[in-house]
Amino acid sequence: MIFDSHAHHDDQAFDHDREDLLSSLAAQGVGTVVNVGASLEGTKRTVELCKAYPFVYGAAGVHPDEVGSLDESSFAWLKEQCQKEKIVAVGETGLDYYWDEPDRGIQKKWFERQLQLAREVKLPVIIHSREAAKDTLDIMKAAHGEELGGVVHCFSYTKEIAKEYLDMDYYFGIGGVVTFQNGKKLKEVVEYLPIEKILLETDSPYLAPVPYRGKRNSSLYIPLIAEEIAKIKGMDYDEVVRVTEGNAKSLFGIGE
Image 1 (cartoon, rainbow, N blue to C red):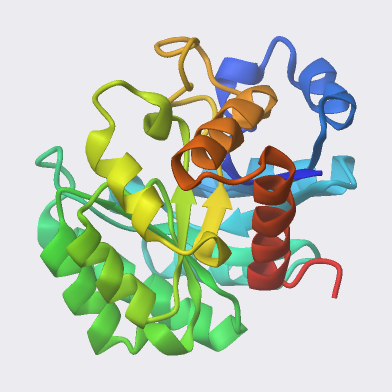
Image 2 (tube, rainbow, N blue to C red):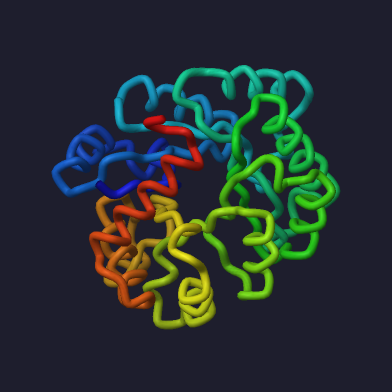
């Protein structure tokens, strides 16, 4: 069964059909989903989804765009969520320099704190990094990220940066961008990476694969990502599904 390692089915984009959509996944070959907290409210909704659906697991964290809402009190609450049943990772956390807000210093502070949190609660991390390759790596190395384990979600950098994370034994979340005509750099990274370090992800409701690009994404479209990876790597589709599912279960400690 396909394992979607990164989705946001708590997003308001699913408010009108969330139950129908999630209930239909198994029939489409999707067996497990990690719903990822991107904010305090998103983490709260993620915990609720974990309770409601046996095949949904969660990550508790605050996306760099949302860290302006954090303070010591809310961070203590976030730590409590990390210790709840079926929360299998801290994240998504990291740096995003695409926008000018929040201030980069604030982003770095709460990224470092969430890495420290992952160490305290003994969970892997889900890393978000956009247009911040050097600073992300510098913070990861300073925090001894190789001891934490985790995945670089929606990987968007070069093979050279990929090697840095491979050396830290991290996984790579590969999503809809790999199907884009202008996704040449990511296709090269996928060709370079060992299949044993790849996780399938949708980042729903964002980054829908071709031919749904620009529309709402969901876990229903993840077979298109697996098909493209199989094509790039010259592998059988079923083998891609099998190996990436095993990778995700190993990282998140599911089914052990």
